[in-house]
Length: 159
Image (tube, rainbow, N blue to C red; front, side, top):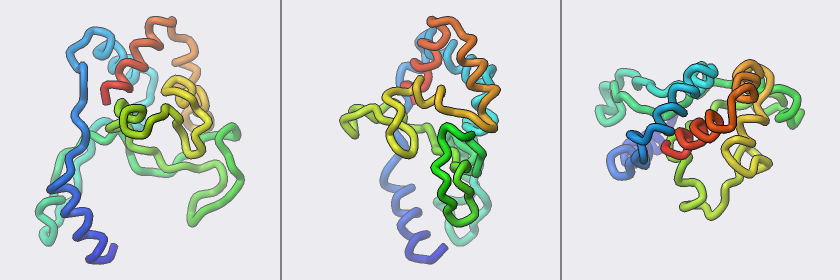
């Protein structure tokens, strides 16, 4: 990374905070968080990450953050494939997007379109487009009751 980019990241981290989670104590949100974990979503959408040691960037060094991502590439299956490779990613691979701030999408952007191309009209549709490495997790969500899926979405909107 260039110094210019690192300076921007350091400025950003000191002046703009990640949106605060909401409704964390609501029973449905708590159940949804448990279901998120049980379904295996946390294998890619990791709740907590600790940043590396950066003696030259103290503001970024050894910070515990909760982005709900692993920042890695994953094969997301044929349904999301665009068959265009980009750098080291093939046409079926996507970087796990951070989910923090997801619940503010409609308020900030004026829509609830999700995924790389906006094809999912809401959080649940985004989950159901998952395939490839996330197929097992998607199948677990499909087996949930309507109430459990509602709780899962309530959790996602709390982020």
